[in-house]
Amino acid sequence: MKKIWILGAGKFGQIAVEALDQKNEDADITIIEKNENACRQLPELNLTVICDDAIDFLMENLTTRDEPDWIIPVIPIHVAFEWIKARLQADYRLQKLTVPDQLEKVLPNPCRGNNGRLYISHADFRCPDDCPQPQNRCTHTGKARPTSLYKKLESLDTADFNSVVVRSRQLSPGVGGYKPLDLFQALDRVRASRKPVLLSTACGCHGVIDAFKIMPK
Image 1 (tube, helix red, strand yellow):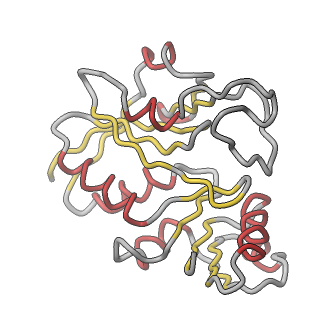
Image 2 (tube, one colour):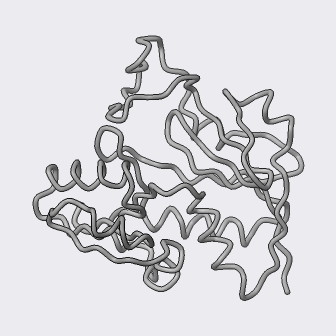
């Protein structure tokens, strides 16, 4: 990991900074945070701080599929959805839809968010901040770990939607992210879809889903 963008300077942004700074001494870490007070309160580590809105920053600076090496979203928005929506706005009208109620019956611990969004998780408890996300057993309960959530979302079978999943990969205990290529591939699939889309970001245990359809302007 040579070049890392961390979106957000709150608690989990600082956890990510400290974990990755210790793990990768030569890493070029940039943290993007729109709150100037939060920027000033960051610990003095080897990083670049940019006070800007995360989606605005991505729109201006995420221009290739292979740079940076990793993007770590730790802000309370669905970054993949907001970025794709912003990328499409010049050529498409995006109509937000409600994630179908039927998915609440087949996905674990569903919780409704704003604008039809759905949050899901294998956990019905608060996970440890430094969970290493082992493959076989839950760190907290010791029980066998169910099928990875991103795989379950990838295999969703619905006649009315195409499921597009951005997988979050663990880079350090409690820290997950994805590559620019993952976002661009999701954007390509959304553009090519002839049906409405269920766009998810998910790791092995947690996920968020937005539903929408796009129409050329």
